[in-house]
Length: 242
Image (cartoon, rainbow, N blue to C red; front, top):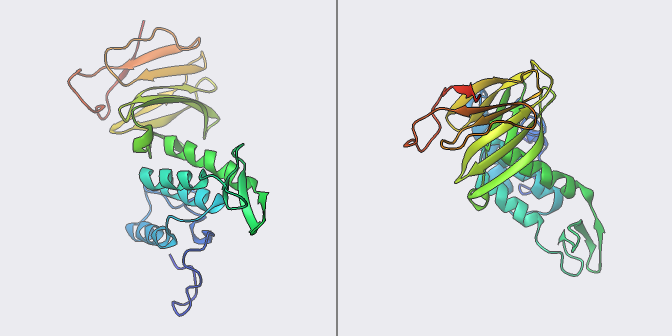
């Protein structure tokens, strides 16, 4: 990934701009699924050279890129960087979480870029979608792993998804959309094509021992697997719960 025409002058290597990585985020032409290893090595090298110390939207963009590379800890560290308190007129988060950009030693200004970029990075850490493919918890940081849930994440294909997790693993998810639409859902080693039924919502459970008969008016499903398994089985079937 060449940012400059020549290595003679690499400019400010820790600059907050990430213009060469537009294909990684917000685009998706560069991705872990099918990009050449050399390209991914270049992306990683550029992000590494940028470092982990920045502010505002610069940190948010780096967090988004590290999330796309499934590096959860670096993405989380950059989010924490954005949330550092603004003291006096310094860069950081104000008491109302507005991102403040330092103009001088005695003044700062609200900059909305980080306030939009940071939630986007959080979403990318929990769900990433490309046409026909949805990956759940691709970059779940240790700090969030114990237990959590998120609802209403927009998914490509005019879908939304709710996700529940515990101990760093997806417990289940609900996909909503027009009947007949669907996508391949990936959760760790588990990967299946999931289609929305006529009710407009479908729930899939990936943890044993819990049964749900209705999911907000739609059909509910569970994955059948031995209770001794610590990880979801690749290709494990999902079957309707009557």
